Length: 243
Image 1: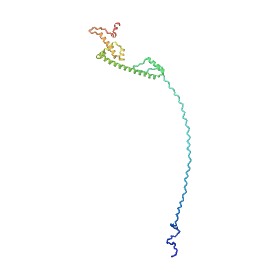
Image 2: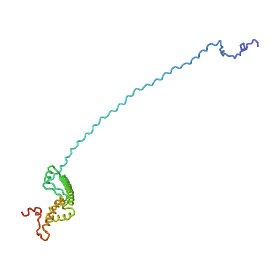
Image 3: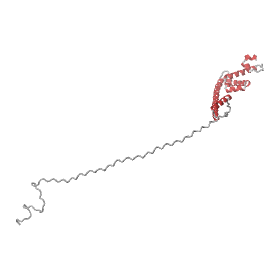
Image 4: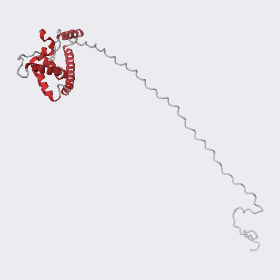
């Protein structure tokens, strides 16, 4: 109906009814109020640091036990003096190698000295054995030296113009006859011991004696003297008429 309030404003705009606010127009819209900032939450108080425990006092070291005194060494008993070796009243000469003898005077002097320094029989034997060993080696070395000298002499005799050469064996045989007839066992021993039986001069002497004796007891034609010539007559002819 005309003139009846229809609830719609004039101008044809529908009315939705209610109390909804009208939309802002360009002319009527004022500045939009700023949004109210949200309430800023109050700063959360920083966590209160836990109370730092007070430094724990270091454990008190246990009381160090006092050093135990070292055990007192027991008194070492004094060493018992060793029994003094017995010195014999007289020394017994140890058994000597075959062929070895000790000079009696030298042995007595050694015995007196051994007793003075207090040698036991055992130590006495050791010294005597050592002395015998040295003397035996010394004698062996001397013998070897004489043997070497004898070989040198023998070679010289074989090469000698008078007694050596082709008639050497004949001359040696003649020298042996003279030694056997006029010599002594002691002379033979000395000739062997000192190799003098190889000495050219000794051989020469015996050969000349043998030749002289042979010539004097045998005269060609059968006129021999039939009287043996003495060695001293051959060696010292100028003294022949003095004996």
